[in-house]
Length: 544
Image (cartoon, rainbow, N blue to C red):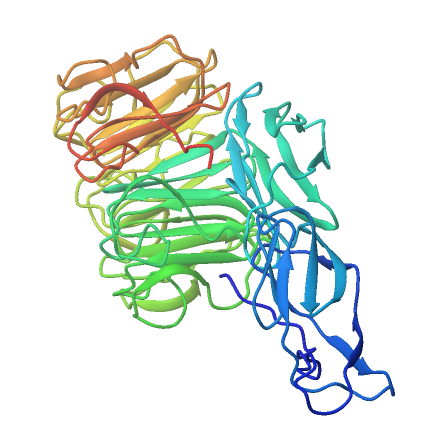
């Protein structure tokens, strides 16, 4: 905002030419000479001294004012100087034969610096971005050709040229410092990759190596976490003041663990699944009650569970099928211990059931079991953890809508539960199966993820496979044909991570690029809503 500054010195109208009364004017001079103005449009009120031969102040003079270069500074008939542009001029005052002159220099001094980018995010090493600078004086006028210096506080991460071109050198954080005169400002630089992507129901969240979390897609319940209920068509940063360790998007709520191992949730809270002791919707990350230190967090449709750093499991939210695992079907709005206390290692949650593995590789499940998704050979619901059958030593377990999958220590993948769309990948053909059923593939599996009605996994060569429902292209094989056995995801990618959501899938390649595919009704793929993708579509977070 422009402002006008006036000198506190007022013009003394104490001079004049001889009006026929009293002694004549003898001397005329400026009280202040050699004036410097540091802003364009700045005002300075001149003060004169006018004396008679007797040394008395002369009153009511007739005077005129002139500027030798009004293009630099003008002067009014009352002696008010106004700067126009950088340069120098002389201001004179005349009364009869008397003249007083002072020099005026206009030299803008930097007061503020505005940058075209206060934060830049790079996805690839070698990428560049141009920062434009506007330097202003105290009254908001831009400086013409100001002297600017550029520096990087971490040139091993990002360098900067003398013209403001920033180059990504390596992963990490840096600041580009811009200085003009005594004023400086910094632009925050992040060179990062995607670490994990977590597709939910109609939205997606992801965490980057910079510890930043982004979410996008449907935001009806505030599950994107940006403080609004507006749909987000592209990845949107979530509270940039926070550093995150992990993130998980569920159906209509999301949760994450911060770098200090505390947890926060946001979104739909009808059954207390946010864990803050209320049932109020939360549009921004809200601390989970109890101040717990967390190792892992996951959730289903309307419930959430965590593993603490001490290896205990606590759950909260809806428990209509016993999915909280405390032996009851009572809802909880704050974290509550499950009934079986073991040394827990890995946790997963389906829509209405929960599973976990111990540090020794035993697997337990609890909650809804209508389709055998607990894997204990029955279809009876359980409000307490029950062991998964077959005696495998599990390295990972993952729960979908009504089915569950896992990988044993031999790298074999198994699934169990509902199989109406061949999401078990066994090629068996039955609509459901209550025991772990081997996925029909010879691959050595290192990761697996169960979605609504499809599943995906990675083998030890970094190749991604999916199977099950493919109505929206969520298998990523360029078709919309359901698959009863794993099929390769299209593209010559080597994958670091893959996750199956409700009707879409996302993954991260070994070079840190993020991809999503499948249903895009609510922009959950990170692009404009409406166009489903049958093959992986690369995410773009934008530089600025």
